[in-house]
Image 1: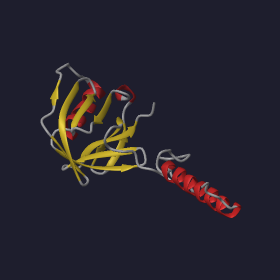
Image 2: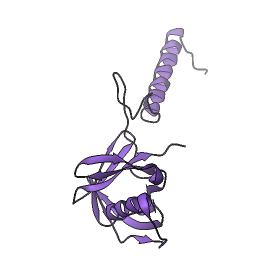
Image 3: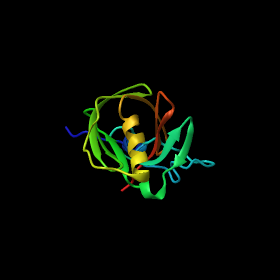
Length: 166
């Protein structure tokens, strides 16, 4: 015997399905796109923090005693860090490259022994490399706000980084 559907039942089923699909689409979209101006808060702007793991972080400044200073032109675009899901860390330090393991707990990252290449390094790139090596050598506090990451060592020194976009 065929199932008979009344117009009212058909309308209710159609509306329920439409609402469910719309709700699912809205929930799926949440958090997958950056709002316009993300990383640069302003009135009515929603910011989303960039994930620590899996992001290529470009070093943009040096940190000392709570003060951040921009990198000199000669040192810009010379250093980056990527923390991988498996705990591996790859870094470009200024002149050399390096790798280590890291454990993230709360707002702290504990780095293992940093293994690096040994090219000579002078000037601003050497200063950058020294700061990077220090930040990746033991334990550092980290903070992410939008697309900016800060790594600060126990002595108050460290680096500021920005998520690199494609």
